[in-house]
Amino acid sequence: MQPALFLIALSTTSAWAQAPSDDETEAARATESLPVVRKAAESYVVVEERPVGKVTLEFHPEPLLQWSNPVGGSFHGAVFIWTADGRPDVIASIYRKYVPTPPHLGIEFHSLTNAQVSAGRDGHPEWFPASGIAAPEPVADAATPADSDAQRLRQLRALAREFTATKTDRKDVTRPLRLLTQPIYRYQSASQGVVDGALFAFVEGTDPEVFLLIEARRTEGKKDSVWHYALARMNSVNFRVSHKAREVWSVPTIPWPQAHNPREPYTLFTFRPGEGVNPPDDSAEPTSVRPN
Image 1 (tube, rainbow, N blue to C red):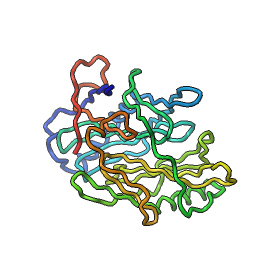
Image 2: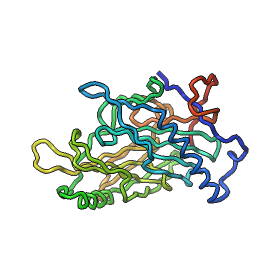
Image 3: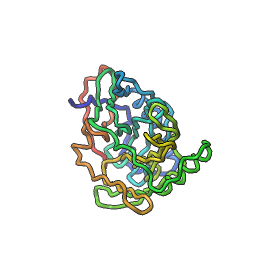
Image 4: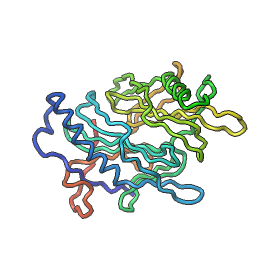
């Protein structure tokens, strides 16, 4: 089943075909894009399968991060999460691309859990990945999680700085990604065994390309919790992540048809300009587009 596409209202002036003229233009686009991407996020209901049945995840309407990407052109977006008992189990980066043409709205989903999840609108599932993120791995040589929140935050930030990431685009250009050393979300989840956790982002511009989760997790048979990490892509290109100069994670470039496959844990939906935001009675046939 293919996901139902929807139309997003965009300006219809010739400015779409022009490069951004100055910082003021980009600031205006950042302001303009936020309510559009928030409305798109709000339109989704995300459900997770549990032993007790289906549970609707909690949507957080305030974005964790507003971002732009001048490397690729004029992109402005925001990051949203859906949580299960406090832990972010689904994440989305939603953006408006202004230039280069064609302009469009993009929605990137990624599952951050091993549980079965799905996202849909108006009762119709559109994203239903067959699998989720790889199980968190222990952080090599990490100290025991500290007792206080403040001490654990210092540990979290120090552990995050031990990781480095690179991106290789479809033109085979490799660039290092920059770590945002302040976590964009911090959480606990007793039901999922997370004593303390934080979500970090590796960015291009301020565009999150790889997410790093670091969690103090309770492990069966051990008295103390142990620091674990997990990684998630937020682009269809090749990424490599190293910990203390040793490569620990690599994902290949995803072919375009697969990048738009709603059965994948990472999925990209892209939509051309149209009339209205997800109009329930729209009869026009929207067209999916691919970003650069």
